[in-house]
Figure 1: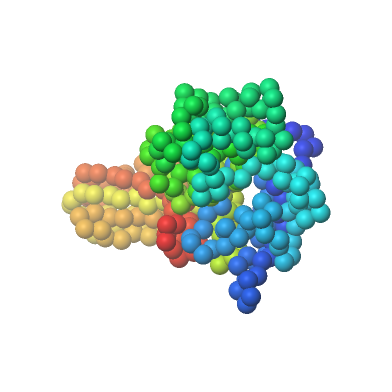
Figure 2: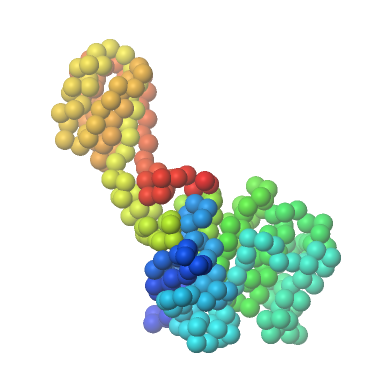
Length: 321
């Protein structure tokens, strides 16, 4: 994952500050702020009911916040929504295409709605079809496309007018592996070219692959936001080392407890499980200590904390709950 450098002095692609939205007595979004620079991909993760859809709807100008502000490339969404939305490409989870039309005709129709005409429109249609890997299916009716191809066409529509911010709301739900990979590669290419992306997903591996920063949302609030490594630190940043073997496990356990980098040692079947700081730099000393105490090692495994464990730590739920 690479991030295109932001233009010096360029306004953030998205700057949402203090967003609040209530529905009756329910506060669906409570003081949410998010900033995305040009060329940056930010993931917005949260369990169902966390408030993500409401937050995105306010950022896209589909809902008016009860409090707070949204600026797209420096343009105030509340004061000048039409000008602000020219900077936005929105790709909703629900497909927004005409199944009877070909891929090219879908794009021509939506391009005209966005003010594109003539050679400019024709050129952009060809470019975005290639970007999403549908260049060879331009004449095919959308109704004959697979679910993944329809989603790629949906993304192409959002790219036509060259937005500075692309919002992708779970773009790989229900798609085949080939289309899923094509979508992820397209997102990577777009950010390399300087486009900002706000990406929601229920697949943690996508967030880890694509996102420069990740915001975890629950109960209407951003619970944490940062890089993968910054978020992992919230769980204590400890690694797990599993030692399998035979011999004098009691002596090995006692010896390992004496090492300053070892936080905890527990018996785990025919072996020991350790939680440590800095497994990569500690493993040699740990193996030496266990062996020296009389443990005959048959296997050593290191597990590092990941975003799934961070998410569970912050929300008490798995991402797909």
